[in-house]
Amino acid sequence: MAKTDEAQPQYKIEYREIQAFGTLKDLPLGLSDNARKQSVSILNQVLADTMMLRDLYKKHHWQMSGATFYQLHLLLDTHYEKQAELVDMVAERIQSLGGISIATPHDVAEMTRIPRPPRGREDVPTMLARLLEAHKIILEQAHEGAKTADESGDDGTNDLLVSDIIRSNEPQVWFIGEHLAATALQRAD
Image (cartoon, rainbow, N blue to C red; front, side, top):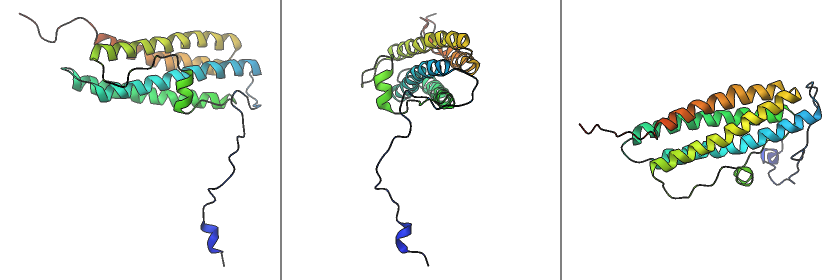
């Protein structure tokens, strides 16, 4: 007969870290430790900035207003979903290299290079311009990181940065940028 206290969850435990941030597990990946460490560092920066961009998309999705509200509300949510997918891909690549990915808003706030927006609502052009600037920061890092990964022989990281980060962010820049063209909603004639 089982003891009745066996069903009690043991939630009062001593927390312990099993791998320190900035260290690598030894994995047989065919890459030098230096190449893996370099890629993990690059990817964690891309991850921090992508997490911030993802959250900017959701902030602007919620706070959108004006004549194009509905279309932009839907577009920003679609872009948010893609950025959320990229966050997972980048974090998993870091882990597969034997590193530790950042994971909390505290980490993002410390590491991101994307400027913090105000808590209040901004007008539509400001929100869209803010998104474009964030994309630019990520794309510049992705291009530089892809080159570094290529030079170190890390084809997986190079592929992720080119095939996923760059090829996802570029069309989003196009879609957002087109909304900032100086055209009227209605013709004056």
